[in-house]
Image 1: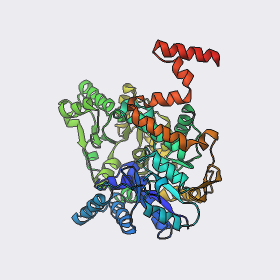
Image 2 (image 1 turned 180 degrees about the vertical axis):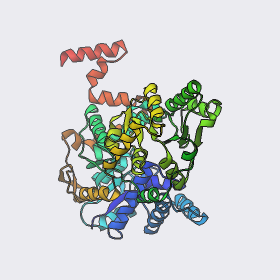
Image 3 (image 1 turned 90 degrees about the vertical axis):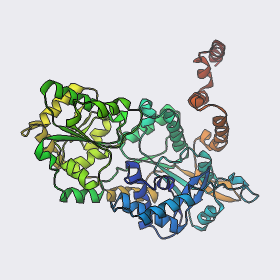
Image 4 (image 1 turned 135 degrees about the vertical axis):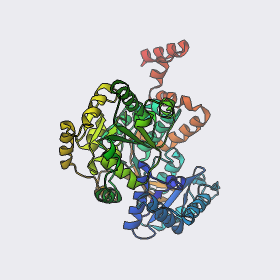
Length: 502
């Protein structure tokens, strides 16, 4: 059977995280699914280190899956022995700087793929598949060149969002340029792109069009709600806080994109104008570049007794709070999907969310949608939902009866079809390489020369500052237009002259 190379780099780097992010859940779910459904030895856990791709041993792979899945998905508390094993595994892999020396036998690989991994792949039959579900390591284009041109791998990436590109003001400096390069590599190297929503699919295809890239086929595979969450939601009673006073809950990292400041200002306004307000429960760790929100939480005496902040909660307590809330408040400016929204509906809690496209998709139109900057309407909706006989709240709750719960079973049925080639993939053609015939993707004429061009890109990216990478990409797309748009008179004159000549 052909090998499946599953990239475990992010899982290894997140080995000590007590709870899973949305990307973490997808990452460990895929590794578990492959190991549970495919024959032993067919799934090869791999990781990236110092620009090279290495294989985990079967024991390392099993340990990583078992311990991380138990903690993140089965919600079993880790003991000291588990922590030590995962820490030791990290030190053996990402914690050890490894390099592959080029030699006469592997000089064509430029030291990018571990010879042991090459032997394992060559021992299989058919075309191997490389799968990365985490965005982690998508910058290492040399690895992907060799996966495709040397091992003949089919390449699949799972894309979660394009937020750093669309909303660069909400991410760390440089993240927008970095994510742009990730998406470039995904478009160039992938045979199939997997995405978490129709919204993300459309955004990726638009990105490819805007960047003059040929878009690979995209398949929407919606993230499933965890069975452990559903089980707990059925057994767990609502929080006693609801008996004392109505409250609302918001869940997510406290970062600018999540728009917590809008809710905090609404609460302050309610308190100052009416003398009281429902409680607001904020569940999420403090993120970055959000000092105004942190200052409000730390120093606003007026709202202190009305706002409860929890950086981390056991799932039982979180579900109890969610079930007792008047509504989940989700005022984000942008999301790739919206799992807290889906889980709230699954738990029977109505949602007041931003009026953004992906929330309409994730909620299946079963939420109250408000513009994320319309503070007055948020204030009005919160006051309405706080009433015990709220008609608007009842309408939203009634609509939730028709919600179709997304499951991992459905997700992996679609994925298995993609893996077997039952869905559209880029056409493949036979080419010569490394002394044998390999099956590689057939691209447009310029894509057939991608390897040569990408080696040049790699050198230029290393020579010029990161802030100029997007200028270089613009120059590649249209040198004449780049010169004509330049701020420098001499370059602009040259560009205009060339434009007239064209």
